[in-house]
Length: 344
Ligand code: PBG
Image 1 (cartoon, rainbow, N blue to C red):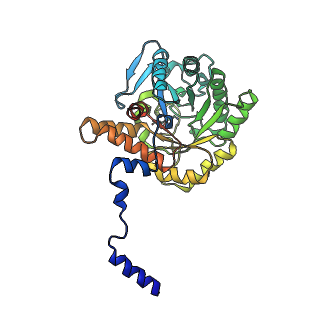
Image 2: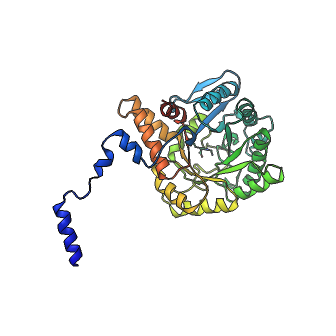
């Protein structure tokens, strides 16, 4: 008691006892005590692939992002590699006549995805290629799996995803990135890849993927949103993607995926979910990836176009905050723009 009173007395005589501003005096000292840093190797660049040649189609809700044919994708990959980016996520838009309820085009060895993977690996062998594993771009219903009895059927979908992943590995993928949220798929993917001789192909699992309206622009880019159909289909993805009211469930999903053999886990979306990122980071001992998704990109671009926000400053702030929250890797449509700034 006495000591406390003395300390209070001393503190009062020394106001202010602490001067936190000393460490913020100038950029040099700030740089010395900065707790988090960003580099181009923190980023993965999501890329949309189109059929054809010399095709480059702008995506209206994602200014600066394009759907490119494989030849132009390869050029872009070389460019971003030179900027220091070392990973790409790839997504394809295939023609409607190739879509059905089984998603079988997804494991066509000569499919658009398989061709894209091998073309990128041939042109830029050191680029880590992580194709998306989910049936939505291949589904006539715009769902991530096979529809039966009014919902996405789990186990038959998982079997399809195994075939899809093995075909990605055969095409040269370094990792597969299941984004479908089916139960047990990481275990089956690991078994399937190993059985096919692909022990070194990794799994980056979208573990805590929420049913989010932030994916809107992505679904525009691939024309992959759930659609009206002649049979009963869910109108959204809430029977497989997570309820955004939940936190503990995210930890459970991430832990399960690590137990099943995931080399990395992901939390998605990013900025509105950084509490989840930190929880997952504390719960698992594999690298945590965060997907800074299409809607987050669109919001910044829209505000910047109006002059309401500064694109570059908001971009760097958000990316730094995602890293600070615990991300080892950030999948972001800003990867190239941010790398250019970081290289200056
Ligand atoms: C497909 C998939 C989606 C995204 C990544 N993989 C869309 C969805 O689940 O509906 C979203 C990415 C983004 O919004 O940037 N399963």
